[in-house]
Amino acid sequence: SGSMSAHDRYCVIIPAYNAAKTIGELVKAVKAQGLPVVVVDDGSRDNTSAVAAQHGAVVISHLRNQGKGSALRTGFAHALRAKYEGIITMDSDGQHQPGDIPRFIQAGERQHAGIVVGNRMENASMPRMRRWTNRLMSRVISTLSRQEMPDSQCGFRLIHREVLATVPLTAQGYDIESELLLAASQRRWKTIFVPVQTTYDGHVSYIKPIRDTLLFVRLVLRYLGRPKPR
Image (cartoon, rainbow, N blue to C red; front, top):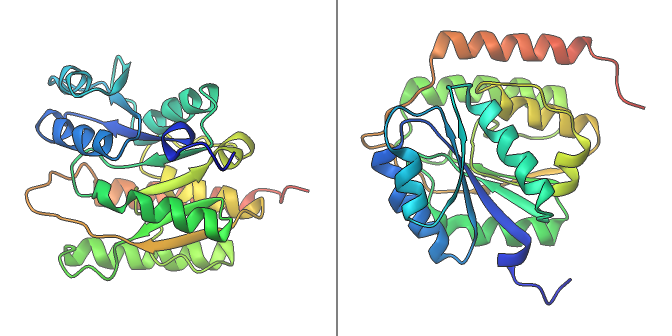
């Protein structure tokens, strides 16, 4: 399938919640890269859906807010049915740069990785508290997966279709990022990291530190108690 362009093989999935201010520009920039975009509107109360559709995204809507994990899993199911070879996930707030996408695709193909994750940790603009939590979570994930995971919480990723087809996901919230890496490593998929630029100015974060840390701890405990797949 070397003759197929990236356009036919990859699609970008963006889970979005009240992202009307940022989603239009993001969809436009991804489309300019020549890639199809699926926006999963997770029960937004603003006109996220309309703006995304206006800019050329396929929009799938959840009637009520179910969480980032649920939104991504809806997008994954769509992409698997549509037979894409790989799925690129991005956050809706504009912190990820569509110009970095080719780097994910090249790295994944060159190194035969199941998952390629953006690494923001070289980026000085990350808020200190977020950097600290990230480092801690990433250390735990690295230990459990026996792979070096410098930025386990970054939502900018490329995931090969076979990973999604074989790795069972149940997370509904932000713990989806950790669950995907742990479940994939359990099935011996290789995860690699590429450096990405991020901008944090003026972005509303829906991450609630205490709730999401507890979700993370619960996920880790569940993972430790799970029998290893044969």
